[in-house]
Every structure is written in C-alpha cells, then in structure tokens.
Image (spheres, helix red, strand yellow):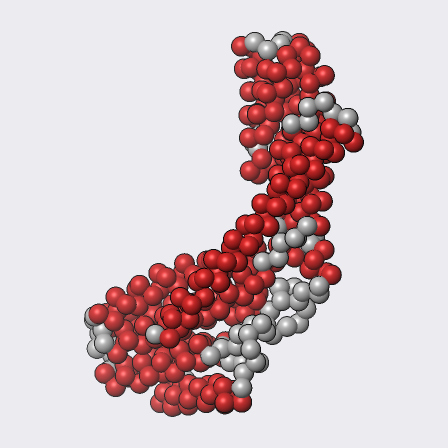
Length: 374
C-alpha cells in the first residue's frame, strides 16, 4: 500500500534525526562533565573533584524538566547517604558492624519514593563514604557534597543553554503514524466483516499493532510536553504545537486525544461485530446484506480517518485535496445516514433486548463525529 512506502521512505530521516539528537547529547555530556571538573577544581578549589563530572551527567537527561527532577533526587540521595555515614564512621568505624549499620539505615531511607531511580544512591554514598573516609568521614564527605553540588548546577546549566531538547517533531510523527495505522485497522475490520475467517485474523494482527503504536504515540506526546517545561528554547522560539493552553487545532495532544477516542470506538465496533458473528440466536446475527453495507461504511470511514488533518509542518492542501477530503466525508456521512434510516423510528430497545445493528451504527456515528474536521 502507498502509505507503507511512505514509511519506508521516512526511515532514513528518522535515523538521521536520532543520530543528530544523540550527537547533541554527547556534546552536552562532554561539555558538562569537563566544565564541572574545571569549575570544581580551579574555581572552587577542590583537590580531586571526581564526583563533579559524575553528577554533571545527570543534568543532560533528554528533557530539561527530567534533568532537574533527577538532579534533585540524586543530590538528596547523596546528602542522606552522607548523613548516615558520618555518625556511623565517627562512632563505629569502617568495620563489619559499621557496614551493617550503614546498610540498615540506608536501605530503609532509600525507600522514600521521591528519590525514584536515584534511590540506590543513598546506600552507595553511605557505604562509599564509610569505607573510604573511615573515622575521618566528615573530612571526606563534606568536600564530596561540594563536588556534587557543583556538578549538578553545571550539568543543569549546560542542558538548559546548549541544545535544550525539544521533542515536538517526534510527537507529530508518532501521531501521524497512529492515524495511518488506525485507518489500516478500520480497513482490516471491514475486510473481516465482509469475509469472516481469514479477514478476522488480519484484524487481530492490526489491533495488536494499533495498541502498540497508540502506546508509543502517547509516550511521544507526553515526552514532547515535558520537553517544553523549563525549556528556554520553547519560549524564545515561540513553540505552540504542544502547549495545551494555546487553542490550536493542530496541537499534537488534541489530535492524540481524538485518535485515542477514535481507537476506542473502532475496538468497540470490533467487539460488537465479533459478538454478533458468533451469536447463537438468528435475531442477533447480521444478514449478508447488512454485513456488506456496513463493510462499505467502514471502508468509507477508513478514507476519512486517513485524510484526517495532519500537523502544520506538512504542506498545505491544494484545492483538489480539500475537495477530496470533503467528498470522502460526504460519502461516509451518506452511508451512515442511509444505514441509520431503518432504525430511526424504532425508539429504544426494551429491557433485556440488545440489537447489535443499532449498536455498531451508534459507534460508527461516534467515530465519524470524532474525526470530523472542526
């Protein structure tokens, strides 16, 4: 299918973007670590500030806000570990009893959830300070705290000022891929309805892939939103794509929410169709005519989903494309209304009665309204 060809064509660009980002991250890591060492050694006056470059690396996480969060957690873990090691080193010393005491307190303190992934830093710092510092643990731990403070500050400064990461484009690409996969899933569902058996297996495969792409797209949008927080580049260049407070029909989070709703409707349609096809009662089964008509409706909806608006970075639609969009929407609307007519005057179902025809038509109406352009 053409859309798959487009994806293969996009792969080299995605790989190039990855290595560009990786190169920037490498440059920042080197710059942060070297700068932290120089500042701690020559500006602050530390003799061997080996913890400074290590701490600086925490400042170059993929997003600025996560760098701040991890740096604070690392600093807190280091401080707690040192606070545990100092009294143990002074009163017990670097022996078996001291090691046991340090680990008991450190392991309990590392259970503080706010430390997150840096929880292990508590036990590492406490044990390292005790074994290296010994009875002189105060003279060892305090300079190391200075090293860590210098490293964290330098690392955060480098990450915020040098190539501050923004993952807006990645979010847009993920949302567009989700849209295309959703369209393919609707086509597969239409095939499963028109020809039960082999078509059902194709839908199962498409559904499994769709759920994976949905999860990846949500992660990309969340990461894109995080990358804008505390990021001076986002303010200086006026990025609007992922800012929820800006009314923007092209906003990735807004389009992501629409596609999540649409995916839920499609999966509900699939579940209802499966129940109807496997029903024992003849009253609940779809007639061949209904299956064919509804498969045609799903095909029309797949076209609408695939032509659903893209992000503003893509070229503007020509008049011909805009006309094709309108025609696709009109065709889906016509098929939907035509299939709804026989059920328009029936009212609601009685207690205990469930009509899968009305249910799938209700769901396809919700799907059509969800992807209707504003």
